[in-house]
Image: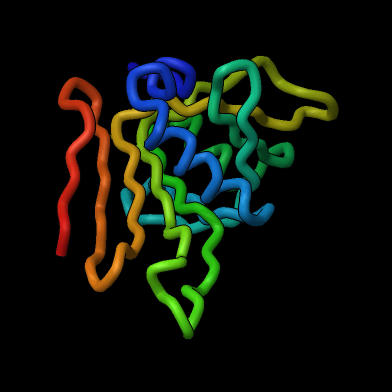
Length: 146
C-alpha cells in the first residue's frame, strides 16, 4: 500500500493540488461499506499529518465500525462552485480511495485512521475542457481531457 508521503514523492504536483482541494474547507464526504455491503456516506474531516492522510471519528461512530470491519474507503474533498464568469478558474475537486488503517485509540476512545492509497483523482476545468488526472497504485499518473 502507498501512504500519502510516498504518493507525494512519486507525484508531487498532483499531491499538492489534491491536498489544496481537501484544505479548501473543513468537511469532506466519506464512503464506507455497511455490514450488508451497502454504501454509507458520512461527513468527515481530513488532516495531513506525519506523512499520512488521516481521518478521525468519535468513539463508536458507525463509520469507524464500518472501517474496522471492512477497511475500504473513499473520500471526496469539500467542494466549491466554479466561478460563473470564468469556470476555468475553478480549482476542481479531489477524491482518494484506499484502505483505512486504525491507529491506537485516542483520547476518550476516539478513532484515528490513516489511508493507504490505491487511487487519487483530481477533476478540474482548463479552458473549455474537463481535465481528469488520476493516480493508481502501480500505474502512476494518467491524464484525460474531455
